[in-house]
Image 1: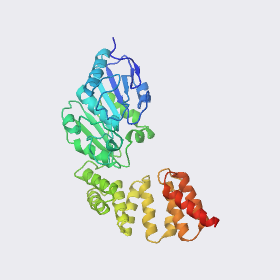
Image 2: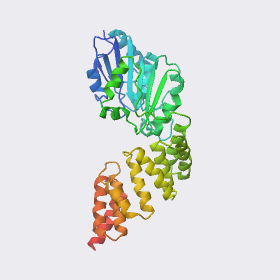
Image 3: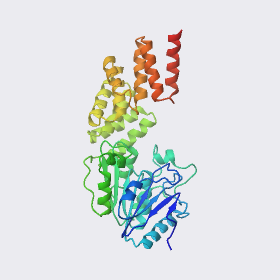
Image 4: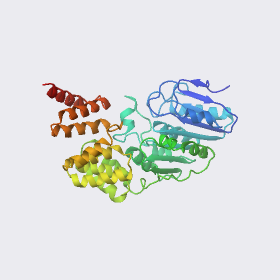
Length: 378
């Protein structure tokens, strides 16, 4: 008799004639019957269990249909492996699912592939702090002692443009069975980044063949020395608007790792907000050179140039990002302010309209548009 039904709102089982069982853990916010990794789960030869945590509990508690506690859920996975005759076990996940892959993979003796996993539940400014279900207390606050018990490899990847993920990887990178790598120009979604470059499926296939993964071409120094802690310190200071502290921590990070695009970005932003515009321009230009797709760096570079009075140059930069989904609203707002300073009310109104269109939830954009429209209609 099989341990559970094959289908449930929280899991989906694909039994196959294989000695391998791969368990894929979904990330946050998945509704019932919605599973990440389904396309890969449909394709591979191993038996598969797709899991959805339901509430955002970082797989620290029970899962409906699989067990009332984390330990019971692990026992259900073990029962499925026995039922299927699977002797090679694998767990895979990203973000919250990466933490789940670790929490269940270690006691199963499985090989673990985790992307962007938080290894402590108490990092300030983390996704755990922002998204975890209200009132839930994770039984395991620090995964390091848990991961020390691993007896199979844990492959952990973190983007160097995501400070919480990077410091999480650094927190466990020295453990015997942990193989941690950082990826330049990558934020919180390494799987999406790899998928767009047709590299995710080959990585999963090699992992399921028990091969050591090839070095990432984006590999950097993000896990060396104190860099991850300095970058995370700069990030926290930036989030808390302690701009002088941002400059101090980011300066240490850049000194150790000059090719870090995100450290240069945080340094440039901190310098901009402490009114050191020329130095800010230099740091932000380095960030953009290192990662042209780091749109916030490009936005703040234009700000630094505008603050130095080179408005024509700033306008040209803002116009290159005025339709970007990340910074387009702010770029148009900045353009509107420049046109307003030149008393070009019609051009200013057009840009404020575009700012509201792209970012309708910013009340300051709507207020400025209403102000300019009233002046034009007076």
